[in-house]
View 1 (cartoon, rainbow, N blue to C red):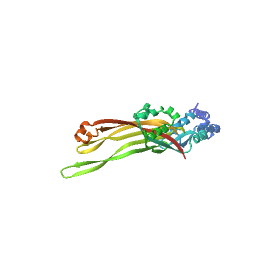
View 2 (cartoon, helix red, strand yellow):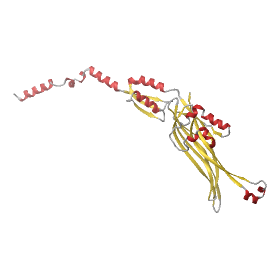
View 3 (tube, rainbow, N blue to C red):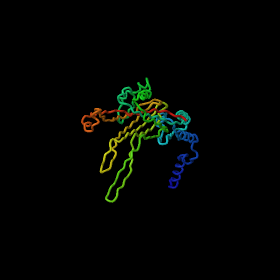
View 4 (cartoon, rainbow, N blue to C red):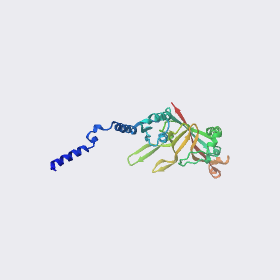
Length: 321
């Protein structure tokens, strides 16, 4: 058989066996195209951005992931927003869930009561069983049984009427959910330093801050509970010391960091600082004390130490607009 005839036979054979879809792309089955498009639409996800004014972002994230563990959620705590990637058919369900969670915008009010209590009477409040002056992450619940019978604040106010307690300050914090507020209760004490040389003398006025510095970060977990991060710094002048002809204040300070959960509308003892003041009293015979020399020889010195506790009590409230 001639070579050119064999070549024609092979050419026609290859054309007959060719895939018609490859020859004619527009001939692809319409139903197949529609099926592929439906699958693409089914797997397509959309984005919803939710801003929380009431609950913590992590709480909402947990609730949504219980609904669908496959939800892709990004939290932005600094703005209180969630970015949710979900299927189109979940849009209405998620919208209803988020509307139920997103209550009216609120602010948190925290009443801070700072009392000074005579240590001899502290047992009336069961304060002796509370942790003292240590950083801790424990929510103090030992006063719950007492608070059920008699209000903690009412008990302290009773001691206040008896002269055994005094309210030093009652600051009130109003905080946006998840934000931080701080307050300093105290005073700035002035002192002067001098620099003396052969030709001149210069003096400088300085101040040192003493008192109580309180910082509170509050986040509403629900309508009944509040998560708080509390930092308390207490500083006071222990003594004045002279160094190179200048008198400087020597500060004593105590710091407390607490992360706890507070019940809304319930007063809770957060911490207490113990302090003591010693005074020396001199007694003399009324006749001998008139003679300076005998006054020193016959006088009796008596030292009395008064111990007190500085107690900090917080009572949170939710303020709805």
